[in-house]
Image (cartoon, rainbow, N blue to C red; front, side):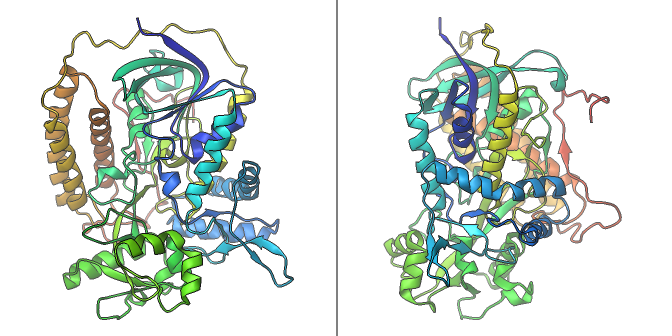
Amino acid sequence: MPQQNNYDVLIIGSGGAGLSLALKLADQRKVVVLSKFELTEGSTFYAQGGISAVLDSQESSIDSHIKDTLISGAGLCDPEIVRLSVEYGKKSIDFLHQQGMEFTECQNKAGESELHLNQEGGHSERRIVHHADATGKELSLSLIEQAKQHPNITLLEHHNAVDLITTQQQDPQEKRILGAYVLNTKTKQVKTIAANNVAIATGGANKVYLYTTNPQISTGDGIALAWRAGCRIANMEFMQFHPTCLYHPDGHSFLISEAVRGEGGRLMLPDGSAFMHEYDPRAELAPRDIVARAIDHQIKKHGLDCVFLDISYKPADFIKSHFPSIYKRCLQLNIDITKEPIPVVPAAHYTCGGVMTDSYANTDIKGLYALGEVAHTGLHGANRMASNSLLECLVFADRASEDILRQEPNRTAVEIPDWDESQVIDSEEEVMIAHNWDELRRFMWDYVGIVRSNQRLKRAEHRLDLLKNEVADYYQHYRISSDLLELRNLLIVADLIIQSALTRKESRGLHYTQDHPTLDNSQPPQNTILTPPKYIPNTDHA
């Protein structure tokens, strides 16, 4: 009989949000952290730009960050959550300093060393704390090193959550989290992990698209886990496409940081002509949705494979010191960014919607938290502003830890039934998973991408229904694999994106539809909230 593992807190995901939460809890709680692959294989590790944070105490600086975030969010940010997040900025950077993270510094006018601050799209001033152009890598390695040394933190690599385990009440607000079934992807065995609190920190869902800047793990696992357990999901129509992903036939998708445009990078057509001034007075520093749509429009208008981002007019030493990772990666593909422009295209980058939470990262289910990209906190609204994502990870890890540590730990183990594989067999047709995954990502890119229409969305909906039936039948009859779990989760995410996009009868932020190409200003903007089929709202609870 498989052994049940008992912990105080189960954290699903080993990125900036998950590891920060683990470190904040570990002195008082027994914590286990799951990583689907290696600990470093997450979106945090690949984040280039930095962390937007107001480091001084001036109210004008805080108000400026708030204003910029609200403008980028196109009317759908929660102002209270935005202020809370911005005011936590300095505390978040101080926490990272305590974990041994190093940041890029410069000398001020007095000759003293201070943190160097970048400026990126949507920001009206310099406030991006960074480590060269590899901030996420430095952050991840610092947190991993600290987590490995803590005796109360267990790190489990190559473990993929199958499903959450809750009490059986139909109304999720009466449910309580009990733990999760977890697949060891090396041994192919499913184990039971019981925990008083569970935090979902699995990142986003951008592998639902054919072209993405995200790593392999970004398959919407946490959103699907929470949806199946009974949690509401919000604003899934707002999938952010990063404007500048490296375009090269022999290279994998590689993000060209927002900071390149922040430091003066110019977008141009093959003939060298600029175009961003035609779309927004902020030109290259406009928010990502505007820049991505502008590039998409120019590519389609002129029948191009890509456009170009040029920073080569800057001194070579400046480029190499500010963008060492980008310089090295491009040089491997025979592109010298000190001498020539970078070929770029938009690619799926960030999930602005997600599992609905309150200001302490609580979901609809007691004891279940969601933080980081998997969550809808109200910070990003209809379009995330550059470098607010790592800030959100740190802020809500802190908030969730406060909430968990206020509770008395209950160390009475609850006996949970073992995972039952008695009715399934090994599959000899794994090709079905690969084929369906490819089909899903292609029609999501073609029909539910940067520019949408009702006709395209309906086509995607029809294709999706066929795949859902095939995969549901497959799931019932064969032993699970990590690929099958990811495909199952991506189908849920795709459905949530399509239904949310069909619901919104306007173009706002990251959602642009040809059928409703303007903002609907006839009423205050509303979030798109989807409710699982078995969810029964509690009218006594706001």
